[in-house]
Image (tube, rainbow, N blue to C red; front, top):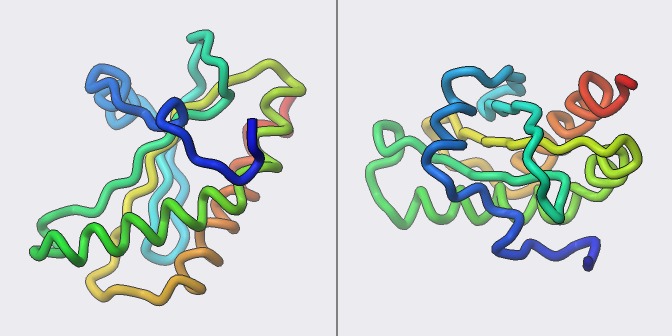
Length: 130
């Protein structure tokens, strides 16, 4: 697997899995971006499945939602390697959902900084446990 790629297999597409994630998942917040995560026992080729959400309630225009989603996806793509590595070492798998909770559209650098903080926090909380 390419370390900086983002294939279709890495996307969480199952409505059932997304519903379980929303209902039972644990959450982390960093200044406008919320991360929901849940450990999964399903056998995937990849240790993480992820979905990105931007509520229509906060951003009416689809072009704005797509821009934000694209920025979050790119930030995740470039900074996921440490989490993937730790999960593979421990034979664990996670489902993740990033939810953008701010009214204004932040520049990519701010979004990336928040995503990096969330991923580091997730690594220490979950992947760091034996």
